[in-house]
Image (cartoon, rainbow, N blue to C red; front, side):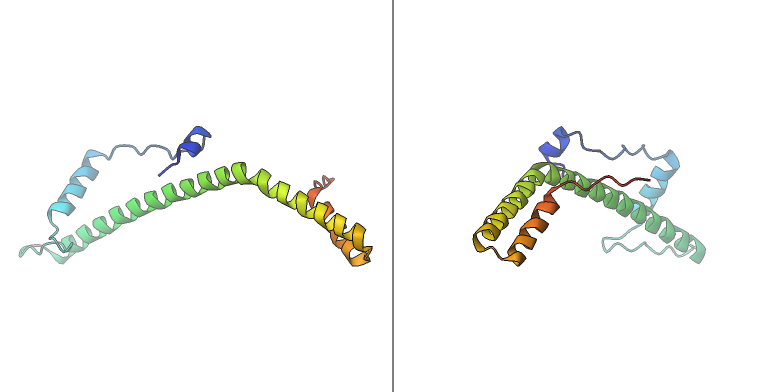
Length: 135
């Protein structure tokens, strides 16, 4: 669900997942073939309870891995969107703040009110870069 702009901007992409090992593939296929349409494992008459629980734990672990991958992918997409949003709209917001400061300065000049002058000075100060701190 990556936008073309995010892909062009050199945004980070999640690392490709390695192919599952053969034993993982067999475990996954085992778990899927033993499920009914409702998603419950089939009961086998000679199966021990421990085996059933082990199979359930494997299925839960696999689901957790898939959800973790989905969460990480979503996190990357949100970061890409945030970066793109800042690149595109950051200058617009800066210009709006500059215009607000100019409006407040003009209002203060016309009214002569000290409170208006204070607001205009505060708005202008927000536009100026913060001084570098000395360590």
